[in-house]
Image (cartoon, rainbow, N blue to C red; front, side):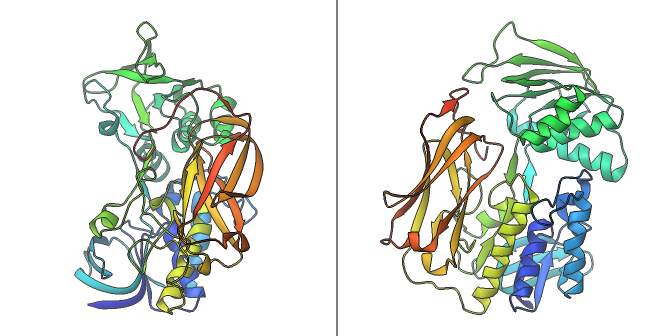
Length: 433
């Protein structure tokens, strides 16, 4: 059995930031486990720029952003294993892994940081009718083929779903010479960042069809076309609104799901809405000494936010190893209301908050000219004006430590109030949506 102080599962941006921060906080003997052939995670295939504006105050490509952390990790002498699959993890922080070099290995950790990221929903998860011809791919798979493997996946493309990866691939396929016919979106609003809608669709004249879905895929051996129809308030196709598009490729950008099979296996409590672990202010799960960060907790829209959250998890893991996390005292819970779909962290222990508490959340719809109100135990502590909020863009709020001085079991509530204009009455009741 191998023994480590901190084991980080996942070598993407979350895992790298967590491992580096744990080292900076005075803990040695750290191991990063990555199942892919290289560190960096999904960033290695994201060759477009726009990364690092918050973290480095400059625009970087995904590989450039990852490289800065990989270099720092190596310079600090942090150990990592590539092509290594974690098979099992339990509440005693014992991990079973396997690779072609070491074979089957058991690892005992004092603290674990979960940073497995997320995966894409596939065609099977959304039940599109039709045969199963070649040419139906998730947007992320197409991105890897085009950007890393050097394969062009199609010439005439339709994209279902307006998540950020789908929007970015609309531009990427266009730049590679493909004709992107349209991007169809089931919801009455886009699930991606506004800047991606402008830069990836509007700038290239690619239509975004809101409140539309695919009702049929045509073709037997290869996709030959698809049928798109408008949907009603209950997301049911409206007869007579069908449009047929000739295409040879369908890319799916229909949501991301946190990779939490290991978390569930270990008995970690999960949040029904985020599909990630329930965590506290230290990013610690209900299993003492097991922390989580990044897209495994909730899907982020910017890698800079993943890095900041993961640093907090890495620092907390180091504090746990050094027995510096306070376990006693008041415990509060967070709750989103009236338009706020979820809040992370879900549990707060004020004793472990330094100066301010950062809360991250997403709204359930598109709202204009609203106020985000924070109440603790019914008492208002913050009110912020918001001209525009949307599900595709994560919101955050800071709360001063002195405002957390309240009774055990109190609730930190965040809600939207005042003159909310909802573009369409829709509530996202979909798993992990």
